[in-house]
Amino acid sequence: MSDVKIVLPESEIPRQWYNIMADLPAPPKPPLHPATKQPLQPQDLAPLFPMALIEQEASGQRWVDIPEEILNIYRLWRPTPLYRARRLEEALGTPAKIYFKYEGVSPAGSHKPNTAVVQAYYNKREGVRRLSTETGAGQWGSALSLACRLFGLECTVYMVKISYQQKPYRRSLMQVWGAEVIASPSDRTEAGRRILAENPDSLGSLGIAISEAVEDAATHDDTKYALGSVLNHVLLHQTVIGLEAKKQLALVGDYPDVVIGCHGGGSNFGGLAFPFVADRIAGRDVRAVAVEPAACPSLTRGPAAYDFGDTAQMTPLLYMNTLGHRFMPPGIHAGGLRYHGAAPLVSHAYELGLIEAKAYPQRSVFQAALQFARTEGLLPAPESAHAVRAAIDEALAAKEEGKPRTILFGLSGHGHFDLAAYDAYLSGQLEDYELPDEIIQRALAELPRV
Ligand SMILES: *Cc1c(COP(=O)(O)O)cnc(C)c1O
Image (cartoon, rainbow, N blue to C red; front, side, top):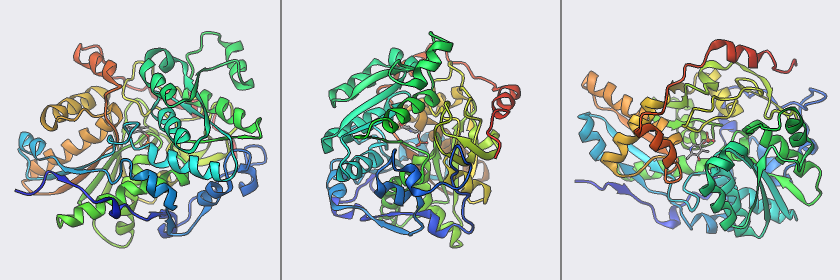
């Protein structure tokens, strides 16, 4: 019987990231300046990002070298294992082969450090002293806290207030790595003060926290901003996931019929799928499926349009599938993945028909997570469980057809900090939520006119 874990030696960590921009049959629409609505110039981003990342953001170069310093940091947890989920296959009685790439082995427990350490590295190299960022549930905040610690930078994290109150352990983790964690909205920034004046009890949102972190960076010379998803350079760094997975599958002589990733802002999905989408563009028969929550369905129900990345309308306008920058996902939703927009590169690939998208209500997602945990042992992050759900459904479809198929999905993180959500599911308190069309239409009415 072949191995359950397919592991690579450290010498096989990819030495270059893959940039899908070079292979897209048509270029995506450029980001626009929020005030002039003209295409963004590199210097417009200089207050927020170091030049190296601004260049990567606009780069059309197919392969980008991974600096030696980053390879050395990657070795702390990479290459990550690829698993064959034999026990799950057996439980499902499917003729399909199910592989999953597990990013939960990183110190922060998710794929996010793959880009956090790169962003910290380039900022450090360009003389930046402090990074500011936002975090929802805390995964990105903890990844960046770790990265700043590894490169000797200070780190300020604006954490959505409801999560700050409900998820104290991720806050502790950030503080262990030395970050300053601030509940958002806060009185530290103009954006935060404005929200608090309107509503002193505001529990915050990712959009508000982004506004605060961006303002903090823009108003301090020694500080820059870091974003954990959505942007081209973030997806570029995450392709290390898919490139490793390809090597691992090649070791066992396999190649997927379908590649599945959960989708919040698009970074773990893009990172896993884009190296395979490259083959699809070259004519190979491989599908890629992005899986999002039915409560925050940016790809499946949001139109492609220019929109802001944040509530206070400070970020550049990105052309993406969006539910509108004022969209607030329902509070009862426990499944993460709450950002209003999809990465421009993912949106563009979707528009070109290179990828598919699918949305699931949360109870079916947690049901899949439990089936996975009870067969494979690992407890998926609620975000990752969306991919588990879709992978199980692919395997059941193969069973129905009585035909084999090879499924690869991304297990983007573990759920050890998400047990409150599992508690809610196990005690029957988790509800599915039909997102009414009116709510989407109301948020879309506030899209900027371009
Ligand atoms: C943040 C996060 C996601 C969603 O972000 P993407 O940019 O869409 O990948 C998914 N899974 C885990 C474990 C996360 O921490």
